[in-house]
Image 1 (tube, rainbow, N blue to C red):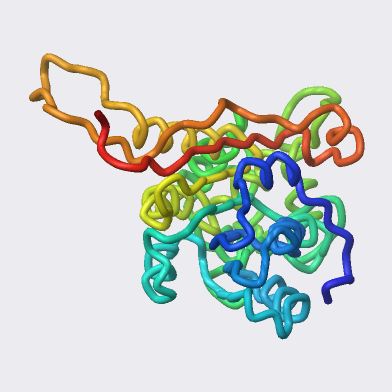
Image 2: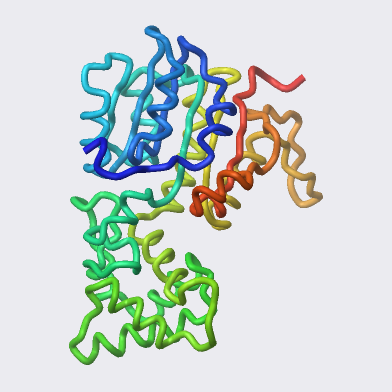
Length: 315
């Protein structure tokens, strides 16, 4: 399994540099995927270091178990990273972690497997679940959701101008007894519903993104891990987040800013005597360089933000 599919981790070098890995440190990779970042992190750890890898995809967990079999430095957890608070408490890691990495979104192996239904590049069942053993598939949701709800999801999570047209087409097809169950069917339906000429991106790109985000509650999970992940860190521990679209990046930026800067003063709210930051911002937005984007097209949309756990109260 570990060698089934080549996987190129995005922003691996900058992420490892941002984590400042110590040989005896404790680190958490909250999005194992196929282990590119985890393997590189482990290579920098000594015999007293510790690495916790988390993923909710059973195939990713199977890969981790094979890859790190017998390595006592590695702890493998099949879980949603949104549950990091409970995971940290269970493992006794709250307030002890020196670096926490999240590489958010769908992994390359998930995209490349038609049976997972994440991509319209190859026909497959319209599933898109990060954990195919839990929850309902996109096909099941589209078979029951109201037109207004479908349009809202596509508009909010895909930032799609023609969300209403697409939702109407889905519901109309369903009413004819032809529910959308395949990725190719959905891609063709969206292409027919969206007006306009040739574009740099496929007309279904935003719709697929929106449905994937919704069915996996990705933004809700991100909000939870951003809030609870701070407590995971030891003083001066680093929180590194790689995202791939503006909906995610805005949430990361706002969460880091809220934890590092006092709220703006308002005449309508009582003044706060002291603000104790829990994070310190490190650098700004980090993007892949030309060399990486040239060799790995997925890196073009990658955005990385870094924050550090504050050592104590503000002076």
